[in-house]
Length: 573
Image (tube, rainbow, N blue to C red; front, side, top):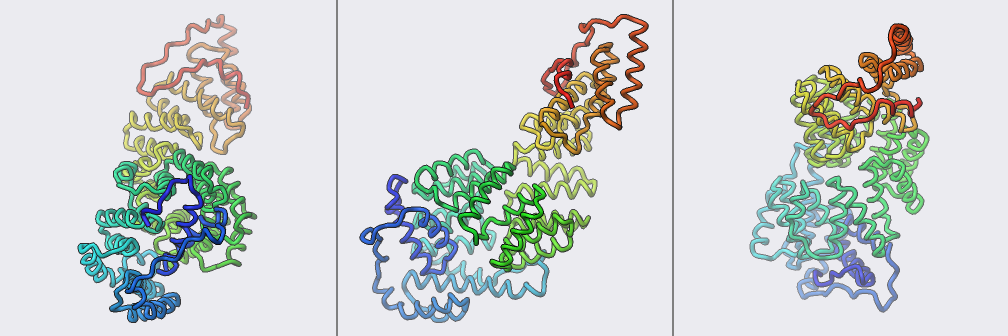
């Protein structure tokens, strides 16, 4: 199979490879990999009859095991895993051996789920283990050492090692599996869950195959390298996969990750038009609708998914988001718990449940939920950020700092993480570090327009009046340049400070302008009028000094961009 790999130049060859691997995956009950390959194959032009690939070669061992394999596969499809394993015991072919081991693995998983679904809540579910794992590891390890495992069985061995938390060994086995069988997407996906940073990704020895581009694009999205991910997906579209719903969904998720909400919504709506019964990724779509407070659309999506399949994890998450948007947090948490009963490794449900517990002021449950999310995926910045917020409520700034740092490492250009870090440093009286964080948040593009305001107030507390004035100036320009008034905007606070600052520096024209602007805001109107009276009294007594009396700005650690005070005139609230 490794020899079949080609570059994108030959889409016919790629289509043949996909058709072949779909058949191989279906025979082994690997339905998710078969679905992924089928969706990709559907995006390519159909092959003429004489171009269709031949069936996989049939060995003597396959012929001997055919009856047992056919019987066992029928039991396997009906989820009678122990029964399937019983009839496959002693079979010699690679296909039968894989299904034998896979049936035993799934039997253990099913028993684990059946044992815990009623007796324990989802928060404890992760603590119950699959009892079959250790036996499977011993048997697969012997075969592995003897070099008797094919690509599919190597994949299963890797899954067993990961479940036993033997992550380093699991990575090595998954890499070996994709070298042996590069077209099995399941192995690539399992490997992606174990890659923690870009350095680790670069150190992996990956096969030079067209499917590697899909893996790299997926990894860039997971590692928050969205620009690189979007470029990869664009290249794949241009290579001939423009009809692929998988690629459209991944691009939408990438835009969701960088909070380009409108672009992501457009792509999800396009995806729904092409594939109206799709449930995959609809939980991410519901997150976007939630952020935009689009209640009717979220309600329609929830009802639509319930009609399609109400026992899917994504459906439960969508309903949870719907109730959360209606501030029914107990109901929302209940649906996220249902999602976790269906799949305890559902990352989004753990994180969203943590958010709901935060809303209900249940900090201990929130911490537990966020910790489970991190156990599922250490790259989930939302869980690290959520833990930071939880410990902030508990007034434990050292803990906050640790968790916000982790979130910042995963999202170095996200201003929210930087502002949270700055606040933690400020609480710990580390003002220099706090200033750096606030300035960096402004530099990378402050989403919530809070960084400059916090930086100005910090300078104000430290009596660094010149720097505070410059930050307030930039803040006012930033708010007005948005073209919309933000709810938390404290323009009046900035104008009040600047009015007093200019007055003290005898720049009465600028002080007067700020005072007049203060009169536009209820909370600053009286102060604005008082300042105008003061300016009037001073002007009656003396001539207005020239602008060159404006003192030079202080030398400070914050690299503030200097702006002329007169720039304020050009911005009208």
